[in-house]
Length: 458
Image (cartoon, rainbow, N blue to C red; front, side):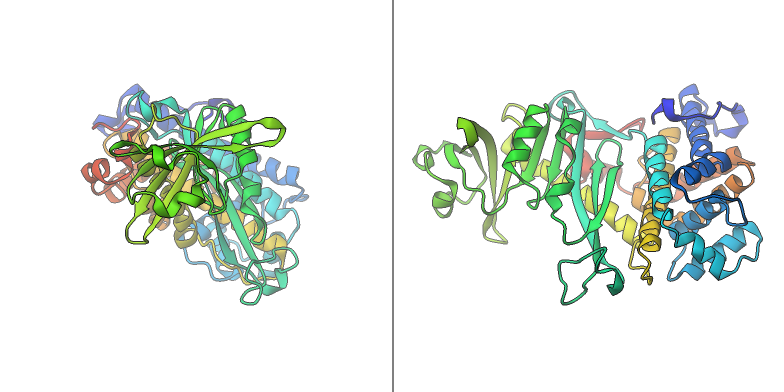
């Protein structure tokens, strides 16, 4: 967590607040910082400021920014939302008011509503995130400051939104959106998210090359671009992507399990693909670029017997850092972004909202992401505070009803009783959301790639 963005003053924590094994100064510091960050993100005045900056709040009425945010977070993060009326019922239950549907709907339909929700999402990511994973050794993955995964997930929206959010499959559903997410493996959290029409090219939403200095980017085959590769290399970054079928470089060197295979060298890749041995191969390839430049990269070809084809991976990570087998295994970490999408859609109500108002739909999409990010941050603080075992973010996402109810009502009351609520939340997640098979994680899970949980005793 970025301490410079936390604006609230630290509060004291008595020893009896923690179980005996939590009473180290470091564990108290994690929870204290998180409590302060919550106040700086979900407090009345910070939310009022954000709402006014976005132009969403001009006058304070019953539907204040904080009341609206808390209702959205609980409804989308803990309940099943099929309509705006479901969110309104949560709002009235939290506040004790009898707000009617029309004025509540009007607050969500304002053009400034998605701007407010997007800024709140950025605040949650920036102020409540912390590193919960790290390389187990300085070798291999320790050479990277982070591993980031880029991908997108799409879903249909109301057909009337086709002009704003055109889809790819217009005969089936003319309107669809795609969320492009960049996920940090070391933070176990989303770094950036971008919302766009589903018809837009995925390549336009890749991370800026300057943001990848010292980092390793994993991406699927919809993203590779030789221009982008050169820019990332120039910025001091690394990439590992699945190659597209139209990539046809000149092969300069081929290595197999038994050593070098010179008879395949000097040809274009597609000309020799069907003659290559059906095993894992390590290739040095090159492309001729404009102005006489030559782009030299590495390709790892892994034969998939079930599909009877090679999976082709392209990277600029040297063989001295990662073997061909490690490259293939590391690419499987890309699955972590799919788990984030599952949390969004299954446990934070990211789905088609039955509205033809683009501002309302976009705002609810960002609000769903806010709820997911808040639950994930609670899982992380539980892991860092206890130090016993890794916490499953998917299980924590399923516990929204039990970990958001009291927390959000505390926020509405000036964070009254926050210390007791956080203690109960951490204990609840420790009992109900701990990773079930930590030993299996080290052999078949993500820990087998040479990363470990921060602060968790082995």
